[in-house]
Image 1: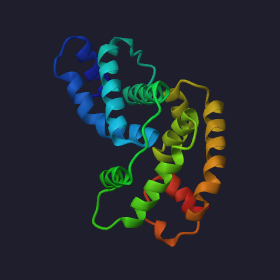
Image 2: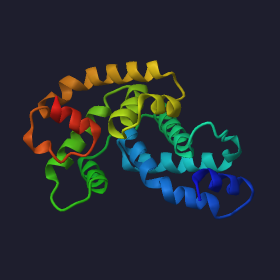
Image 3: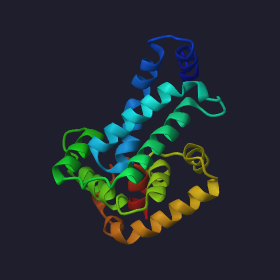
Length: 196
């Protein structure tokens, strides 16, 4: 059953349909929120807010985009709302390590964890709009057009936000460019940093 079918069933009163949507997409939505907010607790709260909003507003889904795109937009908006409402508390080093371990499971991926923590810390220095664009395009692998759809802005705006964000991140993360131990970094940004 497709996501759109499940959403239609949810709107029609099926008590289990929305739970299946959540089960299918919660991990990816949490990854978007974590990369956007940089704090596991704030990310979890944002995802919860987003899924509650999606549950209540399911009948507003027009079907002109994929359900996942619609959910991403709601998650990103929930993150941006949390950032606007209050300053996200600083993340302790042990929380970043824990989040990186959850995000990149495996036996010994110390180099990847270090890079993930550095990128997460650097992203927190960016304005929310640039951070959201970079997370979607460079870290989650969305096309500029899909990211524009998620963020509800023109593609050109996403391109300029990404360009400005990358320009701000370049001097902060320049020491990662020539590291030889980045061959296993899985994010698009890690590959971009590795390949120069």
